[in-house]
Amino acid sequence: MILEDAGYEVATAENGREAIEKIHVETPDLVLLDMIMPEMTGLEACKILKSKPNTKDIPVTMFTVLDGNDDRKRAKESGCDGYFLKPFTPKDLLMMVKKYLNKRNSSDASLGP
Image (cartoon, rainbow, N blue to C red; front, side, top):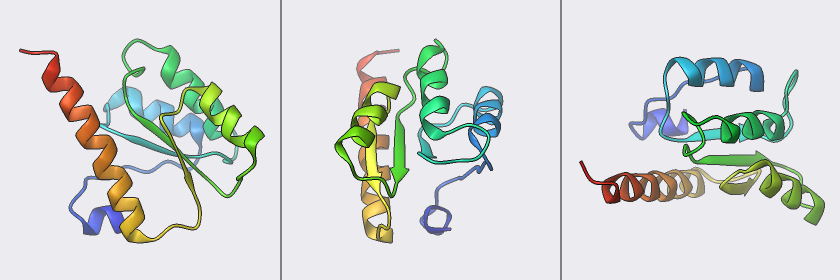
């Protein structure tokens, strides 16, 4: 709701498997995954997304309540671009989303026409 209220188009998924299926139908500009999800974890989903040519460049941010060094290491190894601790404020979420979207847009612009 925070992102929708800020004017972003948002698609949701109940688990990592559903997220991957949706991402292959309509490619998003940014993926936000919870590290702990049913059926397929965010870590597993991120590894799959980063292994595919058509999704490997989509920024993926991992949300989690896990704050140990091993958790951060596993997130990085999965290929995620960011690690965001819960709980968070709406302002923090919006700043993070803007950061990754701006970074992606500037990377796309540098590729040229």
